[in-house]
Length: 272
View 1 (tube, rainbow, N blue to C red):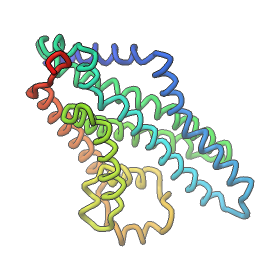
View 2 (spheres, rainbow, N blue to C red; view 1 turned 45 degrees about the vertical axis):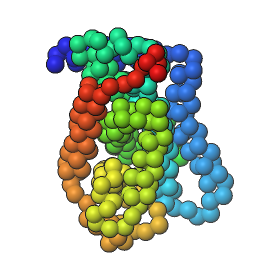
View 3 (cartoon, rainbow, N blue to C red; view 1 turned 135 degrees about the vertical axis):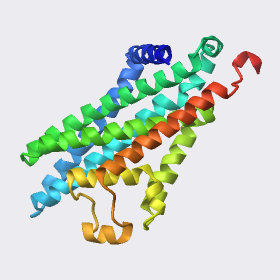
């Protein structure tokens, strides 16, 4: 197991080093700068058109927008990095060598997972930092540091759990892993996570991350008060329970993905 972890760490470093190409660096920079640029444009528009909007409403608006935009780029980066964990090796004709090495399959699976989470979280940190500076420049307050730390913690958990889910999908659906990953986000987090009730939405990852966000950042959702939200969606668990659920899902998906990549037979290009 120690050799597998060492090889996984070596794979992670190799994947990160190989990401410093013009194409991948450009994509990462675009993803990292997208949230602050969009936030800045919308803040500028709101400032020019606002008529007596209170700072509290403006703060809630910017918080919600920041979380939504960063969630979008984090999911996109994870989909781009995790889902080709097997297909990239098959297309690069290196799968035969990996499969013949002791623990090679497991090392490549974990290494690519660690690399994807690292890159995605790095993109999130840049976006969070720039958005926090932008918000603090418009509404200076003492909670900017707490806001930054809370968002970093939330998206760290998000990168872990979604990275595990997308890595699992990459081992199950080789050629259409990205499609299934997008379908999972739409079906689980957008549709099922928005269904009112006390049971259905609790199976979505979005629900647990949203509850952590509400407890760490305070109320920022639009359309209703927190009392009305609780009447529709029910009372949440403690932050510790939500974190344990997220970590449990992460370990479960990584375990299933590791079992799948070790025991499944993949057809290489020269065998077709």
